[in-house]
Length: 107
Image (cartoon, rainbow, N blue to C red; front, side, top):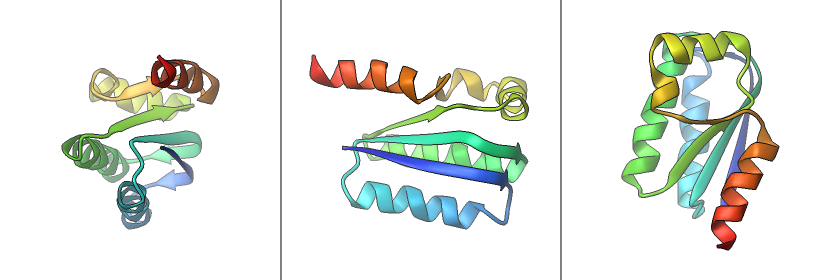
């Protein structure tokens, strides 16, 4: 089962708890793949990045897959500066995610 989490606005310390809750709920409901859509995120600080890294670790520890898509320029730069673009699975958009993941799930 694929669960999509859409984040929006500013991803900072004030949003971290809600994001962690969404990740926990996705895992509890049996999601094997979690896609975090960052298209509507306008800004992310270090606590937001830390939340994504923590979620990545938690999801992988559960034996599941966490992907990100539709990252904006500010988030892309943050990922590149911290080398998280080498750690996270990032897709340009949902269509690219669907093509890769759904075709992989079928075969």
